[in-house]
Length: 131
Image 1 (cartoon, rainbow, N blue to C red):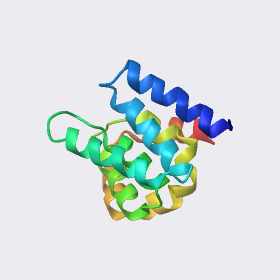
Image 2 (cartoon, rainbow, N blue to C red):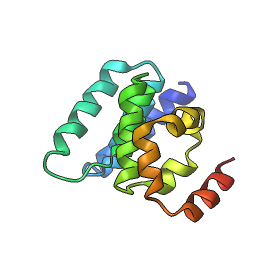
Image 3 (cartoon, rainbow, N blue to C red):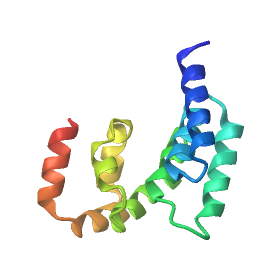
């Protein structure tokens, strides 16, 4: 069993133990996306979108799956929403997974507007720590 298979098994167990945890489902969806199990990743993404009609689902969690699936436009739009509603800002600023998208994020009109609303001191510290 490879590392990804072991990770998937561990996350599947975590989902079983915490079935209402959006983060566990999102982490499993992202892992599926990154390991080429697109059908399963899309199923989790669909499930989380459905849940978002009745409860809060962070746009960051949805974005993590979209980016893993290569849906960059949608992923960046969702990251913009996460920044705008200030959800998961620490994960957005510190996530190594999204470093490669900072150039796109910085040039995105939606995200620039969202970042303008955020305390620049927070971002200075967060960006410094993430590099």
